[in-house]
Amino acid sequence: MFDSLTSKLNAVFSRLRGKGKLTEEDVALGLREIRLALLEADVNYKVVKDLMGQIRERAIGEEVLESLTPGQQVVKIVRDELAALMGEENVGLVLDHRPAVIMLVGLQGSGKTTSAAKLALKLKKEGRKPVLIAADIYRPAAIDQLMALGKDLEIPVRFEERRTPPQIAASARDWARENLYDVAIIDTAGRLQIDEAMMDELQEIKAAVSPDEILLVADAMTGQEAVNIASVFDEKITLSGVILTKLDGDARGGAALSIRHITGRPIKFVGVGEKTTEIEPFHPGRMADRILGMGDVLSLIEQAEATLDKKKAEELASHIKKNQFTLQDFLEQLEEMRKLGPLSHILDKIPGTGKFKGDAAVDETEMDHALAILRSMTLEERLKPSIIGGSRKKRIARGSGTKVRDVNRILSRFKESKKVIKLMGKQRGKGRSPIDLLGM
Image (cartoon, rainbow, N blue to C red; front, side):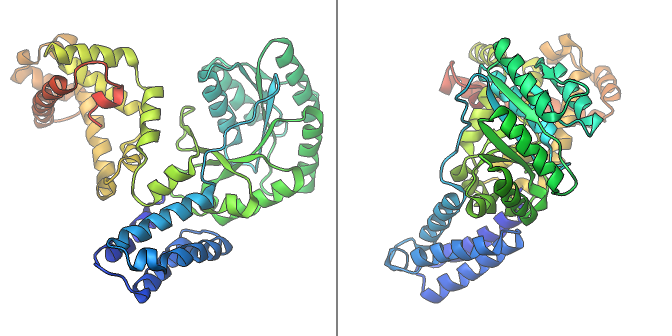
């Protein structure tokens, strides 16, 4: 996500920071390069024009040109204006009624059904009682998919045959009210492209259930086209916000940077993977930091606290305190780290790690190998690594599909980690968060 844009912007900032004093020509050249980088990232040209006007007005002035750190001032200005462009603050859901009704709309293939499940799971974790409503009667696979997701997440899914989508939505909302469910999420039908029949049906559903939220699910991979789609949906049925999906892919960033400015509607959530847990609230300031390679530690901490096993963290803290860190702990911590998603996603959120992104695929493979090796050991071997001799190493290598040298490397890294974690335990004591215990 944003890799190309981030690298180009950082190249500009590096040149500006390398100069002790900036002239108007230096700033103008830098702004021209920033403008080109934004256009190449598929940001709407009107958005780029307005954004560069705001940046130029602030950047070519005494505050920057007379500053002792002019390059840093330019970076701060760009960061602030990017955040303002995307809306400054996170805009949460408005769930005033019981049940509150959330209507998801969008084109076919944008990820509505998966996003409905992700949103339901997120609300369930926050203590709410959601119900999913299958109102896409034209694509049987959508109903089956939602039913399967609901079963996996232990969230009820409502659907009635031989009824129209508005009737299904209204009946399911009434069922939710009677059964004390406080959020009803409607998965509506999409089309390959916008047409009047789809819009008419959405207007009928809206009239039938009076939704608290109408969220457009838009594919970030479509770039500026996502902005055009958002504008049409907003004109026809009045959106309350946007869920931007597939931000973990090769999205160049154009949609994320353009939608709010063009439509006036906030991005409320972003999908960052295929798993039902991989949805995040959209924070404009944090996203601006990530675009500029400054990381997003707050989101990483929130994700860790919501994902990682607190009990395991407490057990690890106890083992560290007693100097009893084992390969079993090592395995469990790698498995906990895996819960946070691909290492490339974690690196996105850690400041100063952009230079490692090119090695992300290698790191993923190494972690997979490490997990395979540790899982091929017996519990006794993980608790007492000293018993692992030559014959055991050969067995472990065969069981994990690796080489003996790979097993040796893991054992060596474990010894190094044990030394570091022992030192960390002395310095930090107990009661730390899981993310602390992972040394992040």
